Image (tube, rainbow, N blue to C red; front, side, top):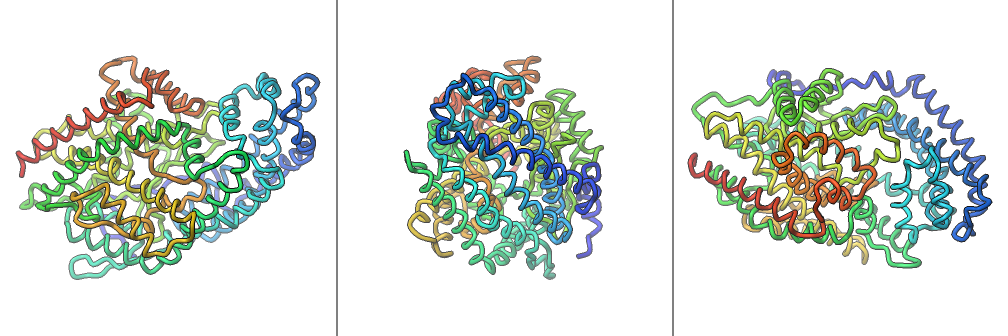
Length: 623
């Protein structure tokens, strides 16, 4: 499709991946994979030493196990090296396919890497089982060494789920079969979302475009354009709803079966893995959801204020990312915010927290680490990823000039900053739960919105930015809990049998109506098909972490004024600790609060209420 002049002005740059690998078929990738082969061969020679003692390792004393511990530590070092070398080609292929899902060499590379992933997982399993099942004294002895001391948190955390561990043969079989099982369904959805085209009626002309580009139209000020784009996207997905239902049923069915297999000594539920992965307790999750219930009327009030600004009784599902209404209709319509302008706005706002943050944003731009172009075969959504060898992040989105795009860019750059301040940590301390992963990103959004509001000169300018601030409240406090409710109800029903498309639609519509109430005109029954998050095969319940991240980061944001010059150093320390602490311990150490209690969250809700009050005052003034 031919790009318009507007797209050439507005859209973001293409990212530069050449510093990692020249191409999916490059000699550099082949060299890395050859080294992976060599490392795996050495691990496979050493692994039988661990395998031979797994049946007795729970009672094996540390005394006299020096040779065994040396083997285990050597295997750990080899695995870490192999992980880095395998990770980067995987990220490279994924980055290429996100921009162009038809990239044949990248597809071939991704396919080749599946076999390496299977072999690597099998190579990891003996050490994993050894550390999970070993006696406490043996694990303590293993960790009491310079080469493994850094892994203490991850090892201790993993042992909390030791009751779920299957036999070595079973774990290897699960890992191998998952590549052509649960992960194959996730890849199928990713391929479909990148190739799907839809017909959008713009004025009197019907235009064909990819799903990601059509999603960009949901940020246009014209109500009919948004509704037409939403309808076109849903019509495109409706054609494939049976395929999506099959994928969703298969992914959930796989996970439920794994829960049953792992319930030999005590029951394992479908929420155990995501709660553990997010490094939080079930008590904290329950408190978070109860706080969302408390905040629901406030979030519905915010949504109704937005509807009122558009002259409506309620928002349509196509209005979830709508920009502020155009208050100067007589003037020439705005074409949007150019990417470079947006990036400078974000850099300036980040810089007000600390100059280091602003410099980071410009560095990411200058190094070509942002992908924001428009393309027919781009996959929808936005994300931040990174390469381990170069220790450099990459930001992905489709930038079309909407105010919401500016906030999305600020969000992903927050993720990038988070990884940047952790770049020198050991590999075992760089991984953190999604709930904490959303801290820096949501903090970044809020920083940008508040900085822009502070610079606004008129009520109309202030309203335009406050709109984005208020837009986040229904997005996190209504939409995210609706996703959680849908997914929870779906898994409970799927435990009995696969669900039909009509049943899945009903579950989604019911969740939307429950959380949005009369603040929306109609539900989005196909949201389960169009939302990528439900099909991420490596992670389930990719929803409540966003709610946690939003409310936690807003609470963190409120600490700025109180802490003054001490805030930024403490903020960086908090981010660095996310890979080696639970959410509860992190909050206790850096904020002196208990996440299981309501007090911290209610202070955050009070701040959100003040924001809604200010937005209502602006709405009353302007409308």
